Figure 1 (cartoon, one colour):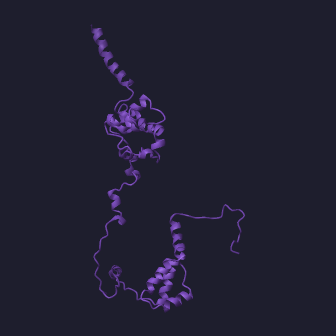
Figure 2 (spheres, rainbow, N blue to C red):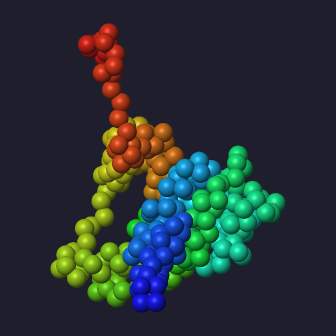
Figure 3 (cartoon, rainbow, N blue to C red):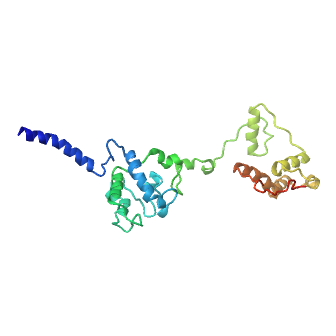
Length: 273
């Protein structure tokens, strides 16, 4: 009897260890394996092999993305696809089980083990590495607007700022001039006097189109006595092709655009000659 009792004592722990070892997966995915480790070891490779061609790497078939956890939880055209901790209530599990109208993958059902992987993943609460979240990568569902987006300057409501006080109250011609003069006075500087019309057209032309005005343009402006002659000059320069040519060069610099003729081996040495 002692031998039989001893045998049962020795065999029971071994049997338990054996039964645990043959389980295809447990909720932690292995001895001491966290939910994130379970995802990286079992779930991500499965998603990459079976799902990413339609729902990953920027692909959003049915408006469903599996690139990030938040994208998955947002669902797709059919609505939410995952209920955390409840695989039996998740559309994703219904689709891979082929028990509903939606069957995924469409070209063949997953194996029983692969289905079990995803079921246990959902039962774990859909663990996902923090670094793979869209909050870290900047990716989110198209059309969604966050509170951070609303704080961008162009989306904020227009507010009338309080006009600053200035000592030379007769200098400003419009409200904006008060801000300029206020800063000048704070720095101990005096505003420059108004330039003559010849200097004005030259400065404006060089600033806007990068070219000096012609003699005929100068003469025309000097002889223009209309009230809005300054406004007309500005509008004419802004509407000129030269304005677009000048400022597009700066825009192309920002976009790092460039072109050369290095690929042309028979190029003329002096093309302007």
